[in-house]
Image (cartoon, rainbow, N blue to C red; front, side, top):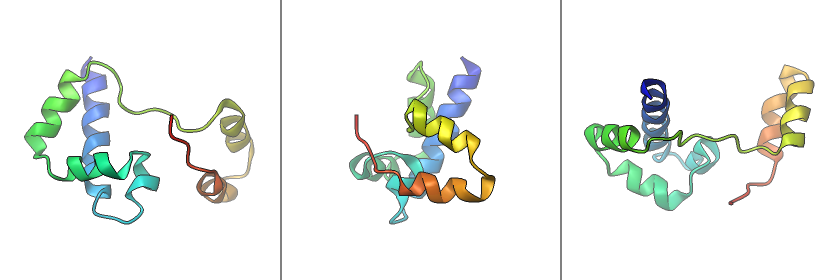
Length: 90
């Protein structure tokens, strides 16, 4: 559980920082409404949220076929490929 807390905490802190950017949604995969709420939270509140979630809040946003294609392409194309994919909300 310590690793899950650490991953959640780092992700939520990154998302809070990304909320200040126009590209925050793209960087974090989190809707703007949630980024706005995270941007108002203190470090302590984010720590409490990360600790109490109990599961990883971070997930892979690509489908299986997109992920396979990403892994098989040259490094120099990966960022362009991922940014070109449509954003999905599930």
